[in-house]
Image 1 (tube, rainbow, N blue to C red):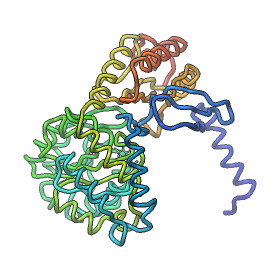
Image 2 (cartoon, rainbow, N blue to C red; image 1 turned 45 degrees about the vertical axis):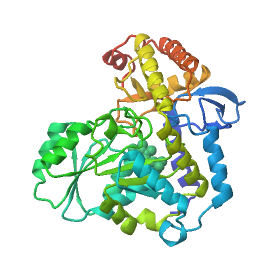
Image 3 (cartoon, rainbow, N blue to C red; image 1 turned 30 degrees about the vertical axis):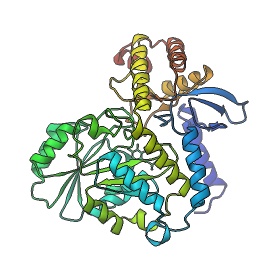
Length: 415
Ligand SMILES: *Cc1c(COP(=O)(O)O)cnc(C)c1O
């Protein structure tokens, strides 16, 4: 089918329908470095303005930290710009080894393998370690990149209801005939901010002879008393067999990911994982800066402590003004609005108040569960948070939703 005028019209009509429904994702351009305060061009072509960013994964405020930037420069100067190779040919430098060793120590694991991204780590890990006689039993809300990786693997795929341990136990019983059972979960679920109950999951895996893989992308660096992640939070550092995580969120926010875990599992990934074999090595400036990040957060918990304080402060104030936030303890704070257009409209009004947040709706979250997802950062100061809550109060009042229950919001706006 040629892309003729008729085809163009078909696509244009679908785009118009998205706009008519109030669900259009507009372009926004950031014209500064990433941080608590950013300079934004939005709508496209409008004058730039300074706003407060409350939707980055910059949990530890390290994306533009002077020491991290300096380390990136040093990596650039001493090891060059790019590797022009995959890891196993001529793409592994001494600094790649150093970062892997530091990650193993930080996460409390035996070995670590770097990937170009956590999406790549998740794409490669399952096929490398499992085969036809095995089964993967995953939480139903795991991240899309885990689902994609599982699809590439010949093991049987089964699921359990979100964080439902009774259901997981049933599935573990059901699959006792398999060679290997691998239970898969996110440590922190990115849309709801829920913590997977890893203590219970480890106990079940012990009881039913299963391995456990945790994607800790939204936890590494700040969940747990010293920021090691969800396994530290639940006191089960020895019970998790494989962790996948990203350098693209709390750990500086550039890019890169890893598989970290039992030595033989990581070694199999080194031999077989396709993104490791077929995609280019992480660039030296990123490796060098990531090493600095691990050094900084190993030395002091100051940043994760400040993030925790900010999170509690924000959650407390938002509950007080009567917005419907999902309870929890992570810096992911969903402001539940249920209706997609309401989420989009409120996000636009928040921008007018100088707060950069985004509405999330289907297919990013289940239909009828639209929200504005707020993410706290150690880069936020108390007055930033005060300003954000004040804006939510003003915009929430405009839409008449302050103090309303879920049912009342849905009665008024639908889903
Ligand atoms: C962001 C995210 C990823 C992808 O990480 P990248 O390094 O950006 O590819 C994978 N898993 C989870 C749970 C994530 O939140």
